[in-house]
Amino acid sequence: MQLFFVAKKISPGQVFALSELDYKHAVRVLRMQVGDKVETVGSDRVAFSAKIISIDSETAQIRVQAGDTPLQDTELPVDAEIICGLPKREKTEWIVQKATELGASKIIFFAASRSIMQWRPQQVEKKLQRLQQIAHDAAAQSHRRQIPQVEFWPQLLKSLPQEGLNLVAYEEVVKAHEDHALVSAFAQLTPQTPVIRMIFGPEGGLTEKEVADLAAQNVRSVGLGPRILRTETAPLYFLSSLSYAIELLN
Amino acid sequence: MQLFFVAKKISPGQVFALSELDYKHAVRVLRMQVGDKVETVGSDRVAFSAKIISIDSETAQIRVQAGDTPLQDTELPVDAEIICGLPKREKTEWIVQKATELGASKIIFFAASRSIMQWRPQQVEKKLQRLQQIAHDAAAQSHRRQIPQVEFWPQLLKSLPQEGLNLVAYEEVVKAHEDHALVSAFAQLTPQTPVIRMIFGPEGGLTEKEVADLAAQNVRSVGLGPRILRTETAPLYFLSSLSYAIELLN
Image: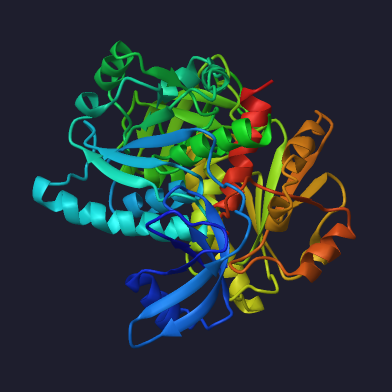
């Protein structure tokens, strides 16, 4: 069922209009009709099934009526942010799409020491807009209740907040056979933990200096299993295992 | 460190030659030299660090000497197979690459009811060869101890073996809030379980009939968390959570 994010809160049974952009998508692309059901998500992340009650091509407006009971929440119980050394080529798009499906609340790219790809300051806004659209579409398709924010940090250490649980995926931990760090980190999460973040290196990995600088800011190194994961795969392992640990296991 | 799969068992300290294909890759692409260290994996899945002791361009032979102690195993403790309804376009390549990084022992594509992409019988061999090469390269890059096999099943039910633990990812389970099925399935794994398999629908999902036919063959429906995952993402959630459950948690 098609999902639309709405810019305000929705109440049970409420009648409201979709945005003009959503009107265009619903009518011209999806060819939706009066009587069709959709999912609508309010700005407070509460979602309702809704029925199309009118389509007016003169005013470019679709009006829907929300159902009586909210739909289930589909968000992770904790905000999970992935912070990725800027990878090559279209991997940024792939990461944003997959991380959104898997529940990330924020997807941050940063200029890592070994990042081959670089974003000049004047390019950043346009690139983020494109990635933000990908996040929007993926959030709708995976029936999220919020659209993850995509950001770019020219300098990781300056931008990394101290509150929350900060982790870095570092394969040297794996080689030392110390592979319980991720389990311990997840075990520390409580309903009061505001956010869990994991930092990932680009192709070529993080430098020893980058990891040491992060350790000095209390960022804990963890392994993601015994196999080496590519820069675009590691965040998916993190988000999937987080979901398994805190949504499926209790 | 570059990894090479070798067609026989390796003993500690043994001197042996790499294959001709690996010679070409090592010398022409990687420009390796005498004294360089590599990883070598024997046909019994036991790996050794090895040092290049000679490079002979006349005979196209690289000889290496294995170290004294085997390297750690990097394979999942159980064989894990993913069985994917044939997806569109290049997703087959993505799935093979990522599933190999994440530890799959076999990657099977099948002709699902809703598969838009179809493989005619005369195309299958060539497509599988290409995918097998991708599996080989990904297995080397992620430091696996075996190369996953890639297969194609024209008919799922006829080809699905009964031994082992067979699961199907079916989002209707999610909607019914019965989300402990995956945890229960993982809890059933013992060192005697030969294999765990999960079946995934293509874009558009499995039909009710396909799921009913699978249930009649004792294939259990499980959910993969509350968010809808694309056909190429769901197998990665399965393999990541399996790794987390049986490699990181104990």
